[in-house]
Image (tube, rainbow over all chains, first blue to last red; front, side, top):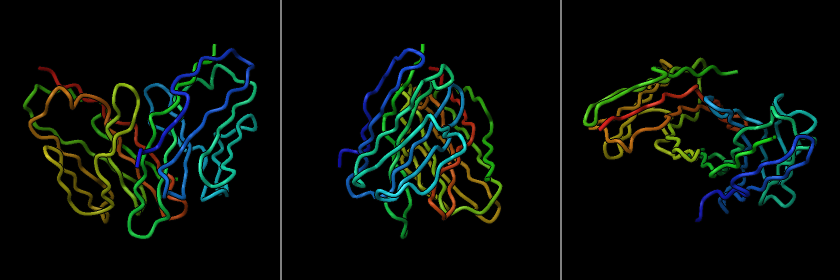
Length: 115
Length: 109
């Protein structure tokens, strides 16, 4: 068990460019979550998957954002036409389907800077 | 949605001191977790504690679900305890977590 892995760790991009982040969850976890954290704030929920199905999306997830989990394993989060307001830490978490324990584990995050 | 409030927002401690961090939430939950965010941004799991009391070394936590609050105790604080502590809660559907604003702890040598 290597934990939740996110790549890249840091991304600097020019405004208007597209970026894609990857998350590899803990292998036996079937739930995967994306969160966004801006400076000085707690993380905010963006979206989650159970296996390959995207079951909920936050209103924070504008139409420039898309997330996929095609085979129910890793997930990607793409931001199109990036804006300076997209600069944040993007965190991925995973958990197992709740029976007795729904504990979520987080990756190291991808820090995005839009210049 | 659920509201989560943490107090105090900032805490400065002398090394060796004890402290209590509080988390209040506005609705019944089936998941409550405490995290420590390190300087590189990673959220480190401290406790999964939807109810009851747990201890891990110098840290302990208590959640009183019926009164909608949780407490994190830090005893004999060390400089490595510095950082931001987050409380996060979740309900049954999807178990997405709602985070509080965090408590920023600075432990001085």
